[in-house]
Length: 477
Image (cartoon, rainbow, N blue to C red; front, side, top):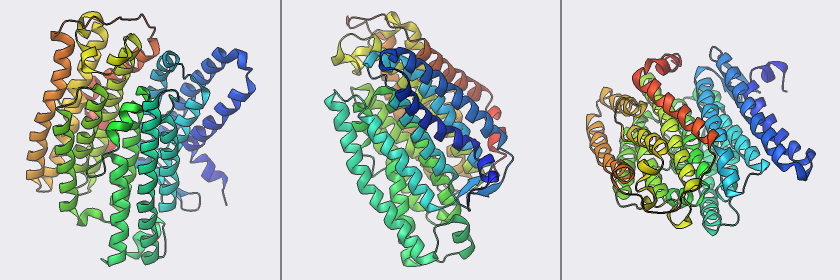
């Protein structure tokens, strides 16, 4: 039975769910000949809803509750994760307006799908039951399948959606089978009940944990289940790619943090170490030869999944803080980079060079503002100070050193140096080559510029003064 206490302690979830439904209603209420007004109202309504959700999430930082019949948790960890997710979605919505208008896909259902996917992400993070994890994961995934193919008239977008759907549906079976094995051994899917059982190392129980872990490996884009990322990221609308590769990945890693903490996955540090190293190696090496910037950043995101996975070798308070700090900085720099790519697509006249590295030649001369912002994001992705990306990698590798996995940290640092090459290559194209001579259109991108500047300010603020963020993260435990 749902009580008023449940409702009052889940206001951010209620706001996100209600916004998704209200957007669909607004689409039907407003007349079709007033489409411009409708989309404007929906856009500002989304911004206001996300701002309100973030405010209420801050109010939940001091709580420690289990609500909705022990299915949902509300504590400092879930509240911080909600703030991160809603903050990332705020930047996504802000950057979407101009891009959607340019690509002629400015439909209200786009924003509804964003909020429904955000609801799924938040449910994954706040879940106190594996059933809620499954519901949240599938809600997020179904929305991602549709958003990946949102440019319906482009074959590349349709192809990416179908590939993502087929592989995602296949991996869903792993998740469900893993949950079934865990339930068969413990008699429950509830985190609290399972923790009370203190399950031993029994074959089917461990098999269940392994299958669930495999499903999360797919969702985080880690090796060896990363094969879908380059094609999906290249074919999806650029703003969607930025959101999926940053906010969506953050949700998956947030749920994985809770999973590792509850199910005592600290017993497999060598397995996690191998997964992390192979993910970093594959992503960095393959990215070296890419000529399409979206594919380059797709392989880069695989490498970053490997860096984040280093924090899962041994879950402790410090590693949790390190992972969350990295996720915040990753959202800002990855989402910011894709915002700029979307703006370059708006300005580039020839569709053949929109995402090719050739299209970035001389960008520093034709659009110095865009080139400067993209340079900042690429430097942060490379882990160069004084940006937040540097501290993200520092804390992640330090967490490995503290648990005597120095060799993993050394390999990670060396592979991170390999990654610097392909980021610098893009920067060289922008500042040290002459423009390719392609037509450049004059496009208003006020909202996209604002979103990119917000991301830049965040990278500088957390890079120069990381304690600004760490003081909230340390309150988790």
